[in-house]
Image 1 (cartoon, one colour):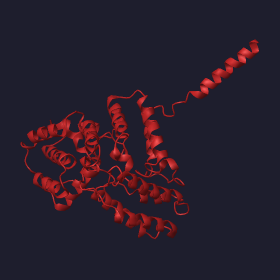
Image 2 (image 1 turned 45 degrees about the vertical axis):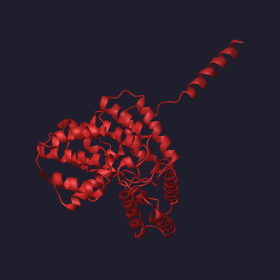
Image 3 (image 1 turned 180 degrees about the vertical axis):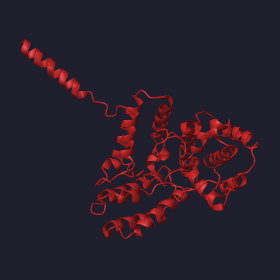
Image 4 (image 1 turned 90 degrees about the horizontal axis):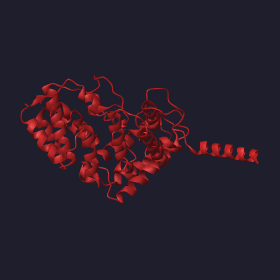
Length: 347
């Protein structure tokens, strides 16, 4: 009897141990590494390429979303500092919003990144699957009035045409890319380029303002605060060097000389932008630039400014060319709210 009881107890302990899932990530750094691995096609590392990407690494696929959610949930159970907690909360909140309906983030040439992996030429199945998933998701999103804006659509079209013109893409895969190109040609973008043009877009934008600024103010309250600071600063020359692409945001580029503080968001190049911005020694020229960016940010994403309106506003505040204004406006469209990382240095 006792032997049976002992065996039963051991069996219960074994089952209990099996049912308790071990936490796969024990630190903020472990979780960051996991996110970087998951986002291989979004922020391609300089390290040696792997043979092929996995199903989990197909951007915004169901497997990707499940894996990312698991990482976020692990982070919420860790002991983190206040800045890290703010990052995690921001990313968890973002899961509620429409981002997942746009499989191809327009600031990144995901197709080029996927093609760069060794083995993609001989095993393009994942790329074909992802292109079909992207088209199906965009079609599904239309039913909820979720559409790409014209800047996003133009960028995606440029990436696809580049792949079609490449001699390195095998013909069988190129036919699938052409089919997706035809789909984009017939795609009708939404009228507004800002987040407010999307269902729940205003709430999504508010969450970005809250995180990057570290304050909770409505866009209209921010307009008042910005105007009080803008009126005391003169128009300044713009002397920053701009990239030819948007795969790294202007804010990431602007803070490139500052001490790195690790982050979790691929759109911030895995940097904690608010923390890094708070450490920057800002000149009046820096402040004027960022105030102009913030003013245009709210104009685009809350007041539904058009592209020309936003460009005119930046050129009114800064001594910049049409091309520079175009780049900065596109960057604001693709990376909403990031400029508010500097607000604590100004108000």
